[in-house]
Amino acid sequence: MSVQVNRTLGAPAANETTEQRLEREFKALAAGRSVVSYGEPYLSFDASNEPALNDELVANPKAHGSSVHVNPARPAGAGEKSPSYGPLYRGRDDNPLSAPIWDFHIYYKPNNLDEKEYARKLHSAIRREFPELHVKRFWESAIGPHPTPMFEVNVFNTEELGALFSYFVENRGPLS
Image (cartoon, rainbow, N blue to C red; front, side, top):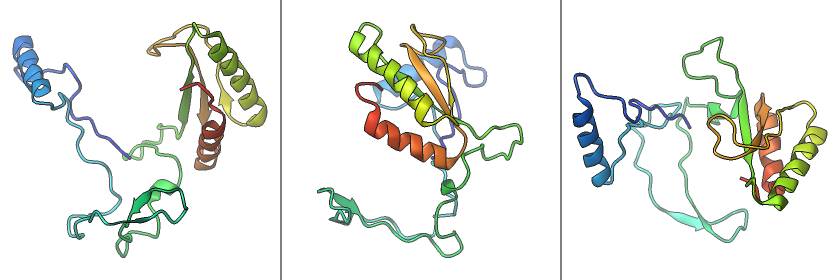
């Protein structure tokens, strides 16, 4: 999913005073609206002429107990699958300096010794199980913009992304 943020929180509109900006943002929040505009989610084809989606549900074919939507097939010429199944997202501007790297940040509560111990074990296990990945330092305290101690793992292709995501589903324990 691509999310485009058109204005950041606190950024004034042209010729807007701080008081005007705060009033505009207060009104937006009071009305249950965001103070930022997110644009439209990315689609790899023009869906403006496609029929509206319906709310039809069927039994889950994978037998997980819940119902799932009946999704339409991709339109002719749009490819069998989304291009998002391909290489990691590099931005839509084809910037050659844009590296195809995704990172996972694994957080733990510093005052919970069990969580901290599990985080250390998980950090070690990932280093052994996935030696090809870039596993960064185990932080004992919050660092930079991160509100709590953590460690980071970088992946470089969709195969690694899927493998590590699946590994975390099974092994993240109490961590987020």
